Image (cartoon, rainbow, N blue to C red; front, side):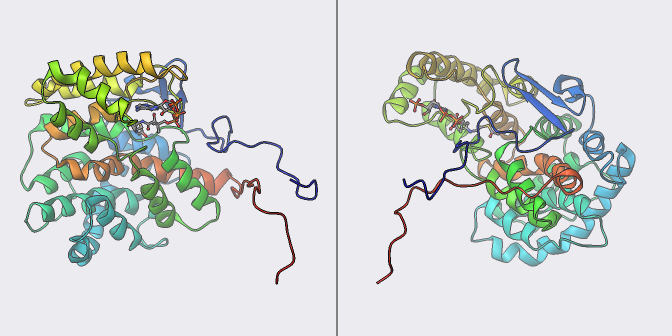
Length: 368
Ligand code: ACO
């Protein structure tokens, strides 16, 4: 390369060690296996605080709705407001996968609206996801009930009937567990768009698009496919060894930041074990997990690979009778409040995000 084209000082294709934002929202300690959500360890919040309370915690200082009651009321009203968009776009969503259908519907939300945009986006994701699940099962969508929590109303709309309190609590715990997680790929994507001042809905769509990929939020459906293919505890080692021989990645393992076990995996393992119908799968999952960790330790010595959040997510969402093809959309229903908080933080305190690329193409020559 000629010195006429000077490279930027630092090159980091995966941005592994780059700090691209300052945030008060959450911190992932990859060495200690610790997730801090705005001053609380995840264990303090999951199963104790509602999704609405944790959303309020994240939004505090950035939005008017910052306490549990105000967030719950605002989200309830906004779910009702979002339902018409779901009805209008369901026919077009029929030909798409659930997460693609969700992307279509979210893209129809305005960036500026009478309902605060972060509330509308957060409320809309479960309404859209539930309508898509119902349509996939051959039924008309159920309208939202503004008096319920996000978790209970989502599950009710998706399953078409009132749900047991234990199921609503389990989904609430899941949604809190995934609500925010540092500068993960989808949050980064949302912040990049927010930094251009494109607006809330546009930023959330960007987050969803990044979440869709199997290396990020697309993993839990394939985790269930893996359990089905393995079948029995005794078959786990051989099946996983063959998959690694073929060069495949084992879904639900590995993480860019965690060098130890993802703390969210244990929270969700306990939730899965508490749900009726989850226990048989938990035994199979434990056998798969143990065999996978042994194999990964032996064969992938460049980096410690541990269980991540998606592994036990698969068991929780299956026990809640949600279809595996919609798992990424359910993940989005939890993560969206975190995206919204990051978008507001980026808009208030951030800077246009504009890194450089290193040019490795041909040197300039004369055009013929
Ligand atoms: N199975 C097998 N090998 C793996 C796995 C895995 N799950 N994860 C990483 N590796 C291997 C890589 O192939 C690489 O091997 P090599 O050194 O022989 O080339 C080595 O481990 C290092 O991996 P990186 O590429 O540095 O890992 P990176 O930090 O880029 O990727 C990721 C992290 C994407 C999560 C990866 O571990 C993965 O693909 N996991 C499976 C998919 C998954 O579970 N996604 C959900 C993540 S959690 C979330 O986003 C909510």
